[in-house]
Amino acid sequence: MNHNFQQIVLIFTLFCFALASQNEAQPNYSSSEINLSHIDSHVPDEQNFRNYLQRDLRSYFIKEYRFTKDVQIEFTLLREGATQVGVSLPKFYIWVIISDNSKNLEGAIRAAALDKSEFMVTNFINLDEIKNNPSVLRTVFPAAVCNKIEREFLKE
Image (cartoon, rainbow, N blue to C red):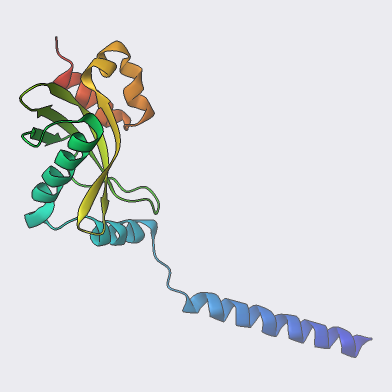
């Protein structure tokens, strides 16, 4: 019985050693390293950033809000750089003013960067909606971005 116990202890010890060795072989990336890697693999480089964002905002408003091809888009980033949470796509928070020959629209956008070549609008809240129900911002945007919108764009 004592011999069997020693064998079990030996096998258990070898198993633990093998398991520990395997874990040491795995790279240990911090969450900030993963976030930076995700940002690097999805956010367009600086020379293309504004052009790609302009192109994709234009396409979005033509398709979703039936603006004409003459649409003009002005935008302001509400936060410098991308916001990265976990392994989701990097997000940008943007204030936009859109106009064509027949209508105007203004509001806040959350857009995700994708594959260094495009932006996908995930949320748009127009100014009238925000004025009627300011708390709607907090369902989409981080508190600091909401505060900036309230401070800079909701002045009466």
